[in-house]
Picture 1: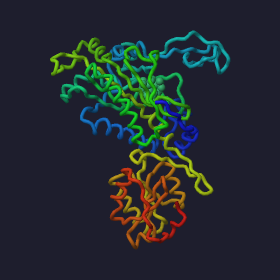
Picture 2: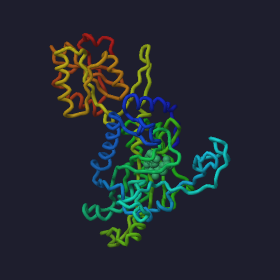
Picture 3: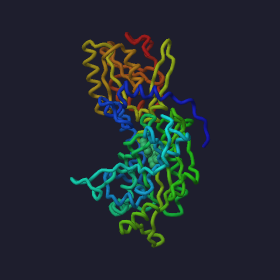
Length: 458
Ligand code: ATP
């Protein structure tokens, strides 16, 4: 797919919004920060959770052919030998002899250190896995690694899942979880960090059907992002060249997003053949084959691996949703997040802090929070409260005004169009449900009346 990306949003704006509104903070900030580690704030944790849930629903709950798994971060050290990570999971590094800054030699084009002009050492391989020790004695024999990907936990449980679920090929195993890589060049906010989360599927298929399934997963994964609102022109598939392919990979393509710094990988989809199961079978001495009832043969399945980054998805959804619109004299900033991803689904806003308005609003809030993540807010003017909710991506605001006390109706305001409709409180929940499911916001007449206090408020 070759498409032109629109002008991307400025990363500075995203970082500043994330800090100001409580999406993402620098890790250990009060101690000066820990580079390339990030903490998700009250809104960020909701967004991240919603992304993982949307993925889990799409790949596990809504399918018959994929089951879930949650494996431990620390695993038997031999796993990393068998998988090739101990030997091969490394970047070539050069170090400045003067200021000792290190760079990836494939990324630096200069012959001298860009920072101080010093001379470089010869490139050396640097393993990206974090080491730690298991048990009370710090010695090499007790070394374990923090997993650099969640995938290996799936491969080593292949037989467990097969035996306990009696799944037949083709079937997949999905898992989300933390991964750690001692990256040399980090940066671009949460795009490349040393601790991050992955959402991975290992989809096992009969050899010979792998190419077809590979194509299927390219489409399926690309469409997942589109279904959740990412603009088509901000996404593309990029096929790896033969030089880029890992030695075991039969094919690999990336889903790329047009990030502020340019097109970059959001998710990698690889046809890994039978490399992993073969390696673990020979390394563990266990039989990891599958008995094919049709041919009465034992086979080692091939695997297609769609491997996505949770943090990169958070960044992509934020960048794609970020919008600035001129609204009268000011600029309205909003996040056009898909309702299923928005941290807060609806805000309940009494027009004034006076009773009995507040009491009514709080009752509505209590009722709605049984079903959704809903926020109550009675501080500041209604206009400013609307803007605040726009900026954090809340799709709907429910406003309770003095007339609500009489006619038992409230106003629902839509984030994107700023249109308003008035609904009876008895129908509020069902209306929100339809709106949050993505139904367009039809403007119903407000009965000809401009509601007191809501004049001019958009
Ligand atoms: P890159 O080429 O950008 O380093 P990769 O090809 O090494 O990425 P994979 O090993 O394919 O990445 O990992 C699968 C997914 O995990 C990536 O598509 C990305 O979304 C995520 N990921 C990998 N490394 C990082 C990182 N350091 N920080 C955040 N997310 C990451």
